[in-house]
Length: 79
Length: 116
Length: 264
Image 1: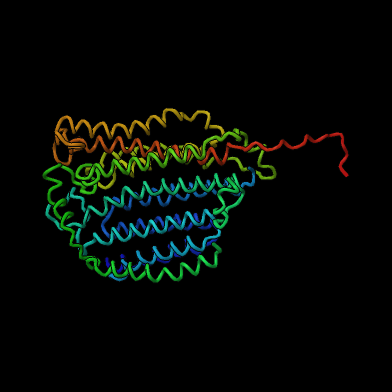
Image 2: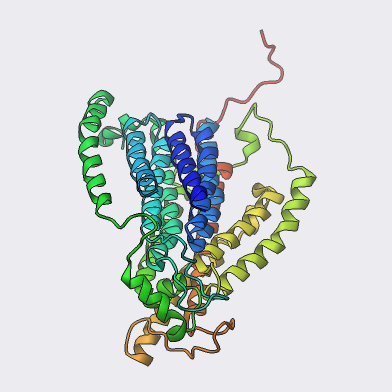
């Protein structure tokens, strides 16, 4: 179990850094979705199912979608 | 293990701040803010963890079984949802800013008087 | 401030922040050895005192219900801000994607997406209701279930293009549901003040442990929060969809093309 928690934490650290390092917001929106799922897995692993459920529905679906919609508006070029 | 959990929280905080400072794009900057937010969740949930303890849900589990701290989890759970809404507000500001100025460069946000 | 100065300022201040953060983290109990007394007490008393088996819900909606009310109003204010910012501005008007986005071909929604999207709406709504209704028994509650419920509406938009559906969108009703959810939370709190002498006191009968209709006002609070969060997220997503797909800023209309004029 502890190995699993450790591995999930390392992945969260790595993907979190990727989210910051990636400069293209479109790729970032997809990475942030992965980041949300990984955070959810960490929360499950440390016995926080309520937070995990919350993070997965919000971080993996709602937030990336709003970023994508904002990007669609910004990139459309039609003002 | 202790170093790893708290280290990841501290790392996400610093990396997110670095991203905010170096950002070339307002949308990128907003997403970096959400990484900083995530660092607080990792820290709070890590503080409440006890190895070998069960989740603080006692359906099918005898009361008295050692469980992790529910208070920090309650703090995170509401903030995950509410924090996302605040991120949405920031994105809406970015969309309006882009419409008014045509720019997404954080460096140009200084001159509010000229462009407002 | 130039990017260079800003970066230098950050590099100078980040180590200071790092040291402060690390100093703070060192003082915490080691990972896996939480010593939280308040949490220990709550884990012991939540089931016998309040008939709530999910202690996290007990903290959110009973022992610290006032905090959750504050969170709810942050949510409310943020959604109001987004709706204001992304609403139709003075120099904008609804238009069609087809006329504005020239040179971009928008593929029609495929039948597979339509069928799968519509097929998932029912199960998603059911799951959302399950998560909200069982908030006091198992992990879940108004916050999570509300977001899931909003996802169901999103599936409808996905299955049948937003441009064609936004006329059917009951914005007044959704806004009413959001405001009503927030108001009902406060009303339940005041009812506690009137009936038990303290704001948000759990005044309803506690019922039988483990039953759906137990835990007093907690399930009711979960339902009103679920309604507010679901309505709020639908408003958010609709605001972004409206902004992206419908709104067009008034620009000089392109000069009409004369079909008789010969192109060089």
